[in-house]
Image (cartoon, rainbow, N blue to C red):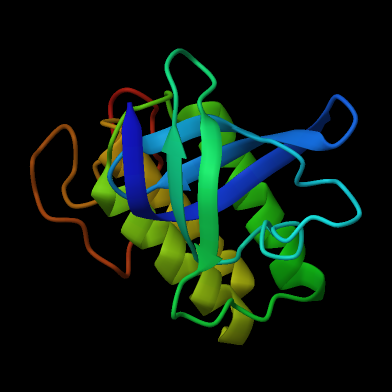
Length: 173
């Protein structure tokens, strides 16, 4: 199988043998996949500087089985978000969520778009925690575990923003 020019982000990478690495990649059209990047840790590698977390990429791969290999990679036309300090730690947390919650090859363009948006929101927002909670809410919604945040679970009346509610799991407010 050969796939060309897909929008992607690297969620996680780990060393493999002497000069290669295994990449956990999140793509718009193919979901989360694992790719073998041959020779990308070598001192003369042309791709080592491009294969960075939070860098919007265009990638191609080929091969059969669970671990196809990366055939080409380039930076997309989008500048990467400037993440530092707390926003960088928050972005790493989001990557871990995606690695653990997304099934391999499960396509969800909405999650990809939300991920892209939250990375750029984290670089400029003074309210990092709010951005994280909104992403978590959207992620749960897209995965089919959304929370009822609109009406009282018992009466069906619309929630009042000036009232405090208790939220009961698997039931609602």
